[in-house]
Image 1 (cartoon, rainbow, N blue to C red):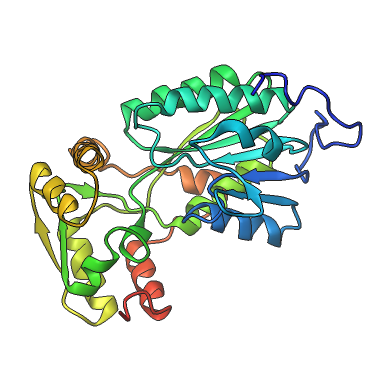
Image 2: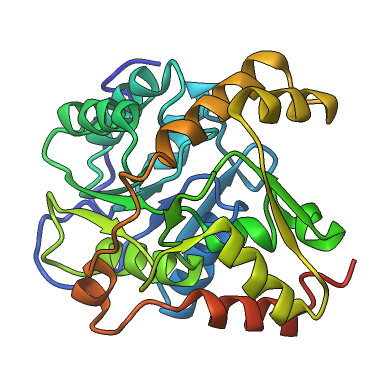
Length: 296
């Protein structure tokens, strides 16, 4: 792919530099994922044209194959960037630089990047995107640990089985509900005043994984207990479930970095952006139970 692949734009494209609420087409990468599908739903409800990019969707988009990026970005006004598997992995910074160059060549006005809170290597990838995105407004949304990891993610089976095995020790984490994250992302994509901002999103209070397990048990009506393990033990457990050794080791190391206590404090960034308090973990658990998350 050449860096000026999108340099020629139709006069009727949405590349206007005017001010006001953005209503042009938005590319949502990883559009069928936990965060992407929520962003797609909200943009659609607002009447904003959306391209939901995924490896097998109507708009082909694969982070491991940049040959489709130009076509996905052509004619768009903004993009939501959710990099898979994580901005801290080797090669993520290079991917962000390449995406930023392509977005700039396509005249994309605004980019909102999902990042991890307290991840040093993710910050390197953030800067790579900023440096390559040209005149595009870049907003970074750094998220705490997703509450939905317990209801539709890697820890779902643990809740259903009654044991949450995880290398978090007694560290507290301000779990973030993905509805709040999606609302912040959409606000940054469609509204003004977010250019250059870095938002650190958390829930309203911090809980240990033991406390979270207790709340999940109350909401689900089944006993759930937290079983702390070491990072190496967790990596071995992941390998038993079919995760490749290198990926298992990376995940264990990442969790050790994130859950050493430096992310325990809450922030008010959700309220700053949305004008309301973030959703509490107990409310998340009740809603997930009501919706049948743990009926397995």
